[in-house]
Length: 507
Image (cartoon, rainbow, N blue to C red; front, side):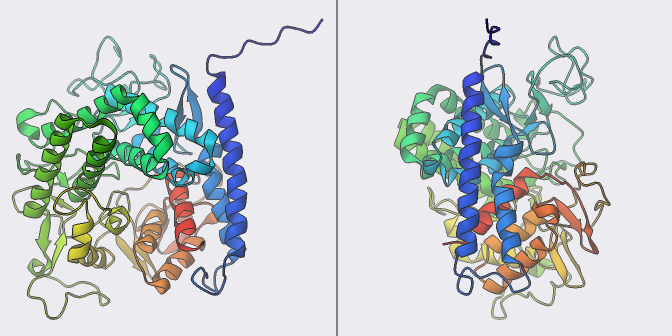
């Protein structure tokens, strides 16, 4: 007789669904590659003569399929989907959201992926509710250092007797990996929810109604967190590491321990994160009106959004005429203007701002504001009003200039980078890494996606494809030696590249 078959695991259905979704995405990736190759090569969808169209097509397939092929795991506790970065085994709320957003646009054509997406959203919500101050999470929990909670970032407790951060507060969840509170982390989760609802109204509405209790609880948790961190010194229980200075409470702005780059803020209030908050809160207002019709929640969202907008208007806009030096030769204030105002990158509420760090390649940043802007609630209609006023374009020009310490240039190679570098993530193709003045693929991609100038788009494509070693995106490459780069398998950058090519170079 035949031997007994092994019993199916409790999560076998999710394993099957993930496998089906991967097949869908691989097949759709082939379709996209063929569509790109057959697009009008001499009109609006042309690529520069210096760039091999077949190489771009292969990179499109590689990057579009990367996340599905390399980052999905099953979270055994509840059979949801856990998403790694591709080169780091933990799950970031920010990265996992962006990695999914490229697929969300095509979700109506990918039915199995829709089921995976819903399970990812539930996993994100549960991580966030377990630790609103957490930005990244383990897949498993236990006493080993390879399980959550992170023994170096969490306080000792019955859950984690080996944890060593005695002063850290509040308590971590069983799965917390990084407890470096980043305001943008949960915002990305809600941005992904909104995109799902916008691109798949029927499936999205059904999901958000069916899981209303958990999702509304997460929205309330977001509002509570942000209101507390508008008065950090007065109200917040959070402690992780010493703060570099005393920023001003009660500005309307929301404090964040870390920038989107994971580096600690220097002045307390990161303006890109607060602009992102305005956009996300506006979108949540729309979702609440359409799906839940909760007057109390709607009022809370509106009041919080309005207070942040007022904080940005009061503290987050600075006059470039106060600078003591000039911008690069390719940028200057309007000749007929008395004052040119731009968004600051970071402020403290006392009048100080990061005069030499104007932006960073990690998103949310100031560069991506035209990409992020959409209609919405309030005087600025989300962020659309800022775009129409001209401040977004002025800020963009300042960011992409030598005045910004994170804008690097050397012998014709130039682009937005970051003070943050990730070392030791070259396991696939070991080689020299970039340790300073690194131009980021994310910076070049977002520069291209926020301009209408075809020559600028082509320049960015030349730079990206000239440094896309092995047909994949990376973190940063050295501006003075482009073969030195960081991160072989960077899921976030891969997803953004695929979205860019689909948006700008395909019908």
